[in-house]
Amino acid sequence: MKSISVISIPVTDQQAAKEFYLKLGFNLLAEAPFDTHKWIQLALPGQESVSITLVTWFPNMPAGSVNGFVINTDNLDREIEALTAKGIVVGKVDQTPWGRFAAVTDPDGNRMSLHQA
Image 1 (tube, one colour):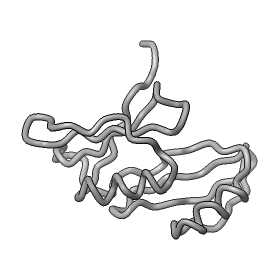
Image 2 (tube, helix red, strand yellow):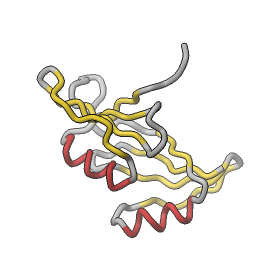
Image 3 (cartoon, one colour):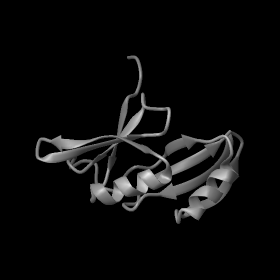
Image 4 (spheres, helix red, strand yellow):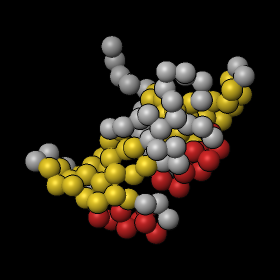
């Protein structure tokens, strides 16, 4: 094995989810028809080797079932301030022995944690 390239995020409305992730700071890499579905792939700026795709077609992955998706940041407080200014709700900051975390939830309830070591 070499690397992780794509992580599937299950959603109900791909367009609403795409708008959320764009507001969160992701860039759109691809949006194209895929079989009877649509392939929407996004990545953080400068991090295109690891991306997410917004999926609706995996029956064993209901929308909102992702938990524990961690996004690193150098300055959690600045990130929270910027996201809050965009209207994104950020949860309380948790201090742990391995860093500070704050949760963000997408429109379907998929939960990711912003992490500052």
